[in-house]
Length: 174
Image (cartoon, rainbow, N blue to C red; front, side, top):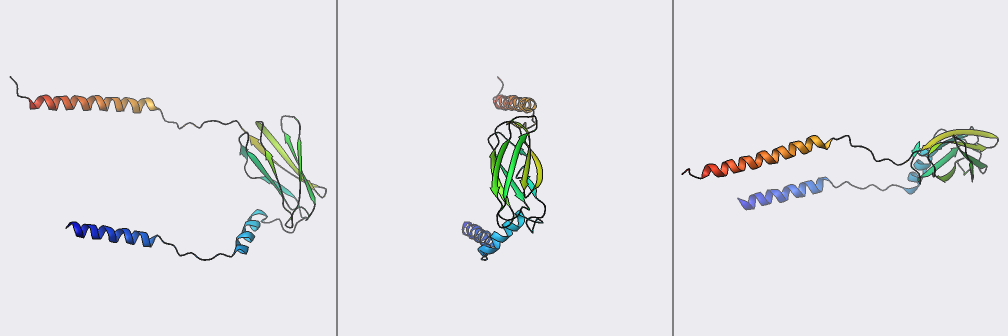
């Protein structure tokens, strides 16, 4: 009996292991690169149409890197990114050259909390977007542990009570 159970277990393990093997199909490197570029510049070709600017996220923590991308600028043109705090303060000016697809990218280290506007300028045209830097907060789970602790304590007390009652029941009365 034990051998048959062991054999069935082995067969099931082998069946599960072989069913999870996925045949690999070769992917040409050119296709991966083209699809990645196409997803970044979707709807902005040909370059030089109308510039647009975006960030990789809308909300950042202090110390995060803000990736700012401008699309639609002429190939080889200098794109100027101006990052300005909404409440006032000094602006940061960064620049990059638009690549063969009209895309220019810069990185900005978010340091101070607040709202920011980003203006990208190229070929006499501008585009604007915004992002926010917020202070780090620990998210609340929303669980109140007082109720759980009370139930756990009551369960332990009742369990000990039942244990002692059962133990004393076994002893004969004198």
